[in-house]
Amino acid sequence: MNYDTKIETVEDEPVSAPFDPLLSDGEDDRRSRRQMWIILAIAGVFLIGIWFLLHQGGTDTIGESPSGQAAVVTVIAPGKTLLTGRISATGSLAARREMPVGSVGDGGQVVSVLAEPGEWVRQGQVLALIDSSVQTQQQASLAAQIQVAEADARLAQANLDRALRLVDRGFISKADVDRLTATRDAANARVRVARAQLGEMKARTRRLSIVAPAEGLLLERNVEPGQVVSGGSGVLFRIARGGEMEMLAKLTEADLSAISPGVSASVTPVGSDKVFTGRVWQISPVIDPRSRQGEARIALAYAPELRPGGFAKAEISSGTIYAPLLLESSVLSDSKGSYVFVVGKNNKVKRRNVKVGGITEKGIPVLEGLSGNELVVLRAGAFLADGETVKPKVAKTPQG
Image (cartoon, rainbow, N blue to C red; front, side, top):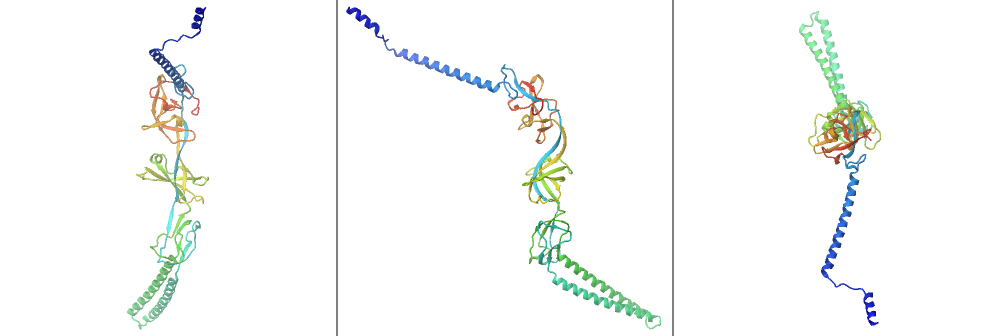
């Protein structure tokens, strides 16, 4: 009985294997290796998924198609479009013909100023009066001298007339007649001299007043009553002749070569929504060596919104061109210049250097490098390499 009980007790208790440190280390290594392989497998699947998402085929996505074939790219055959060239520029406003006005006479003290900046003045209008009291007295003196000279001339003429009546009777010799004739002529000459002196003084007096040399808009006033002015006083007034204005548009050398005198332009002053139409009347013959820019002078009619010294924007017509038109996404650029990718033989893309015009609302005109019949990559050309094989998908329009 005791034996049976002992056997049952041994079977119910778990039998523990003896502890082996070598076996424990091996099991840990196997577990670590399995975990590492599992992590690597998960990372590999994740990377493959990302690669697939980035390189799957689509209308505008460049990369491997699901079947592992060439990248699908959208291309266009742009053809040619008739475009009106427009060149954008900025610059300052100025008077087209600015007339500086100063004192041209003997000068003196300014009595009154009769015009203000912003007013429209007429030709010959007095802008400022200068004290002429001394000149007035000089004119009176010269007028009196004329009267004296005229009286002498009348007396000389009367003496000559009497002598001519007596010469036939023998009372007056021929020599006396000649002497009286000379006296009469000298008296008449003194009359003319006195009159000329009076005329000169009147002219000098008139020149004291500062007048407008031409009709136009008064831009600037630099004189005040009580001020003493003379020929060396500098500019006292500035007038825009006829009120004509102009914009001094700053342009690059390339833009200057694309326009000519007579082309139309639209000018918008800063701070105003009003657009003024003008024409380029002069193109600068000189390029600034520092900025590499020149000036195109745009003539504008008078308008109160056009203020000399203000800033403005201009759109200048550069004629019409017949050229391919591309979206901005099609045209790439690097240190070598602008270029596009063209799909050629065997569906291989090839870099094509191009010369482009200014950006328009419809796109970028290609002036050189394309005939318009090529298949041009529409977007994502920056991710392509020269010579890469692609699967082109033709879009209906450049905007497609």
